[in-house]
Each structure stands twice: as C-alpha cells, then as structure tokens.
Image (spheres, rainbow, N blue to C red):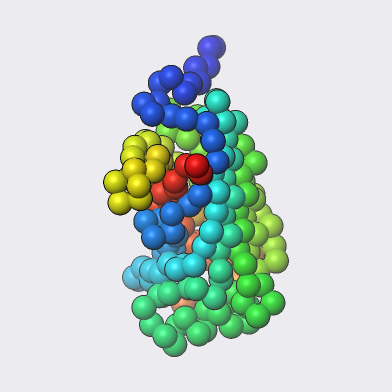
Length: 185
C-alpha cells in the first residue's frame, strides 16, 4: 500500500517558516455537558503560541500556552469556581500548554498529536485538524496568514480536574480551536 503525503506544492501559498498566533483572530473554546442535559460553553481569552511550518507539512509543529485564569464562560461565579482548587487551581497551575509531537495525514485533513499539560498533568492528545489555507491579511500590512481549525475530546479526570463520578458534570470535555497565525517577517 502506497501512502501519499501532501507536499508544499499541493497547498496554494504554502511556505515554510515561523508563524505567530494572531490571538485577536483565534479562539480556544471548550464544551462540557452539565447535568447530562445541556452543553456549557466557554473559552480562554489569553494565550500565545507559534506554528513552525516545515518544507513537508508533516514535519511542522505547534506550541500554545494558555493563561488558565483567562477562562470565560459568561458567568462570573462559574469562572471563579473554575479557577479554584476544585477545577483548574490557577494559583498553582497558571498555564495550560500544548506541544505537538507529530503531524499525520488523515484523508484530506490532519491529526496533530501532542502533549497537553493542564493542572500539572501531561497527557497525550490528538487534535483532528483542518488546514484552512494561506492568504494575505490586508488588515495586518498584507501579512502572510494561515488558518487551522482543530478539535479534540479529553477526559477532565486525566488532568485531575473536578470531582470524580460527578453526575452534574460530564468527564468528557470537547476542545475547539480556530487558529490564525501570521508569518514572522
């Protein structure tokens, strides 16, 4: 069986280089079921990161650091509780990190394998990713810009988040990422 890999010549505008995540045009969000009935949503409003694209897209990498205290669910009391020792324990674990360990092709999309460190525990995580393309951003001096959408589902208990066997809160947390990054000049 022959495996074909997407090369840079097959991706219009693809260029190898270092890219800085544009946080004004990116979003890191989560969804978790509450009471098994409804989805509770939120996001993180402060994060930084870098994408390094290689000549072969499969040799590229991603690193992201999230300020755990920037969690925003739209409900102040919930945000305060999420920042507490019961959940994120931001006083002792102020940063959530993701570092890719590899990228593989999956049909027309990609899987970004990596390590997610949250509340002091590092767990392997695979993000299902869609490479949305490369273009120019006229609002940013026509900077070369790339876009990626990614999603993963993690078990909050793997990170020691929240009580075990809690009927109020699902252990599965879906993470959705919309990432835009600008090529460093």
